[in-house]
Length: 143
Ligand code: HEM
Image (cartoon, rainbow, N blue to C red; front, side):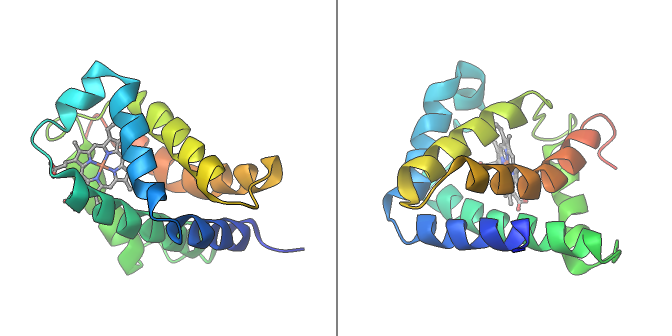
């Protein structure tokens, strides 16, 4: 059986082949709440779209390296840094905002991967949950 991270990766590749995918995501995210709009008030969204693309690869590698037990792999070191940046003391991204983020991302994936199915959506959720749960768990303390 094909691994869920591989299914996610193939779907992500189809999404990124569409110029609209990242724009679609940020458009949805900005429309989703005033709180989120304020967080990104001073952000260059074109640059942030590239940051997101890199972040999605990072989440993929993190999902895979967690399973081989390499907790201090470069991907997890970078996840720790991001956890600190998103924690209460810095960007203050409260745990509930990750639900909106994921909702908007899945919406963009559904609209841009021509082969998208509920099974593929489940692979996105399972892969991303690993990184999202980690960032959420560090919200209060940053570490
Ligand atoms: C798994 C989920 C997420 C990942 C992997 C992620 C990743 C990143 C990365 C790589 C940066 C650039 C900062 C740096 O490298 O030091 C960043 C910045 C940022 N993120 Fe996230 N993020 C996630 C979720 C969220 C959520 C849910 C929100 C709020 C709704 C958010 C809001 C922000 C903001 C406001 C910035 C600063 C933008 C700026 O430079 O102006 N992030 N994020």
